[in-house]
Length: 414
Length: 109
View 1 (cartoon, rainbow over the protein chains, first blue to last red):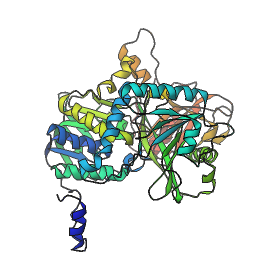
View 2: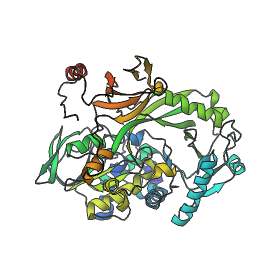
View 3: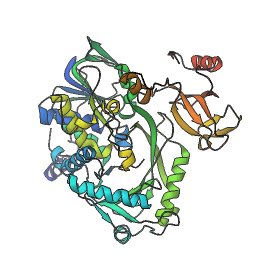
View 4: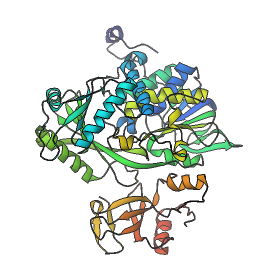
C-alpha cells in the first residue's frame, strides 16, 4: 500500500492523478479465518484494526451486509466528547477521544478530527447541579472539563440566545478537547489500514445464520457461502437483536430510529458543538457550512432508518429558541439510523452465552465518539478474554444489577 | 406518521396522541422465581425485525393501555386490541400470517 503524503500528491500529479490505487481490496471470502467480525461500521473495523495492531491477529474477515460504514457510522452527527459521569464510561470514552487525537497519523488517513470544543448547556437548576457534579467527577477521572458561566457560553457561542423565555441558559459543561471528525473517513481509514494488514473487508456479504457445534461457534453462513472461524465478534448496532437471535440468545436491547438533519450551507457562524439536552437539540457546523442537527429518538421499536416527523419539528423548534438566527435556514436533508438502546444507556462489550462469540452493542445514541476506544477494548477482550476497559460493560451486569447508569446521570443526550 | 386506533374509545389518531409502552405479552415473574426468569422478564427483549406485539397508551385521549400488532420494518399496523387478553385475537393472527409469509408463532402467555 502506498502511503498518503504531500509528496504522494505531487508524484501522482505527474500522472494526472490516474495512478492512485484502491484504498482497500474487495476479496472473495476464504474458507476459514481466526476471527470474523460481523459489521463493517466504525466499531467493527476498529476492532479488526486493533486485533491486528495490538494483538497480532491478522487472519481476520470483516463481513458487511451493505456497504462499508453505511449504517450508523455514516448517519451520526460526528460529535466526540468524553464528559461522562460514571468512571467506567469516562475511561472508555476518554480512551476513544485520546485515540482520535492521533488517528489521522496512526491510520495515515485524514479523519479531520477537529477538537473545537463541546458545550452541554445547563438550562434548569437540576442540570446545573448535575453538570457541576459531572465536572467534579471528570476532574477525578482525568478528563478535562469545566463548568462555565452563561457569559463564557456567550463568548464561545455568540449566536446563542441566553435569555430563552422558558429555558434560559444557566451555564454549561465545557470540554475544550471534544469536537468532531469526518465520520466516513473514520470507517474508510480503518478499512484501508485493515486491508493493508492483509485482512479481508467483505461488503455485500450478509450473515444468514451462525453455525455452532457442541456449544461453541464454528462459523457463519452467508449469502456468499459458509465461512469458518474460531472467534466471532458481533458488532452490528441496531441489528444486534436480530443477529443475537441467530446465535440463540436475547439481549436487553430495543432498536429505535434516531434522526438527524442538516441545513443549507452558510458562512461560518459557530465554531464549537452545542448540546441542549433539556430542549432536545444539538448543533454544530460542518466544514461545508451546513448546520448539523441531532434530533430525537422514536418512542417505539422500529427499523425504518427515517424517524418520526414530529421529532424533527420539536428539535427545530427548540433550536430556533436557542439560536434565533437559524429560524430562516432551509433544511437540506433528513435521515435516521437504527440505534440499539439498553436500559441504562451504556453499551455492552461482552462475551456472549455461546462460546467463542463476543458482542459489542448497545451504544444507543452515542456510538461514534467511542469508535477507537471500543475497538481497542473489544479487540483486547476477543484476543485475551479480558480487558480493563470493557470489564464493567458485561452482559451479566443487568442480571446482577450493576448498571452503569448514564441515563440518570444525563451523560447521554436522550 | 404512525396511525393507531384506540380499541376502547375508537379514536383513530397519529402517534403523538399515544405513548409507546414496549413489548407486550410478557409473563411477569416476582418473588420466588429464579434469577434467570426475573432477568428475562425485566431485560431480555424480543426486539424483532418484523412483527412486534406491543403496549401503547392513549395518553392524550382516554388514557387507557391497549395492545398493537405492528411491523417494525414497514410500520404497518395489523390491528389493535384491548389489554384485557393474554392471547392475540384470531383475526389479527390470520392477518399477520397472510401478510408475512414464513412468520412463526411462539407461545404467548
